[in-house]
Length: 169
Image 1 (spheres, rainbow, N blue to C red):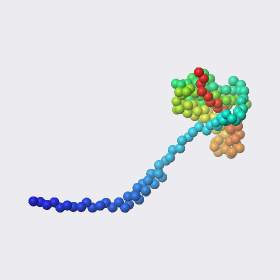
Image 2: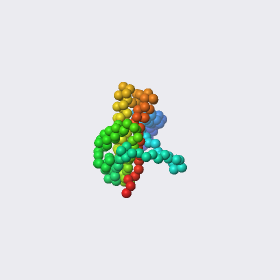
Image 3: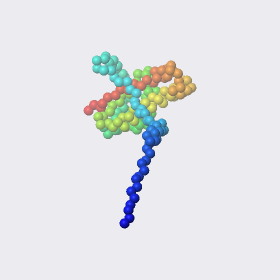
């Protein structure tokens, strides 16, 4: 009968596999982008053992913003959209010449993070727009291009005063 020849399978040369893997790893690390998270810059209230200064503020200098448990946004007890909120914050802060304004934010316990973040973004955008307009008007350049002293003057004119709390039941 027929006899089969047993052939040996030649071995693969894998000496350069590690080099190729390393080069692919470096290639993907260099060409991929690393997204950075952008957060909200906030100054936290002092700890309980530190003395906290309490100020009396006229009710007309307080803009009341609230988000209920169903993510309904209201400004001075009127339901608003995010764009309307931004416009109201801009006009409120711009109309306060004495800089003694406060934006009081209240949220419900079941308010979603997206609704809260979008509301905070609308407030920050309003301040950004006000500061940008003042930089263009006073110094003829963008806020980011102003000198440190110019930026401090603009921030002193439009300081962010945001008070946060939970909706009381």
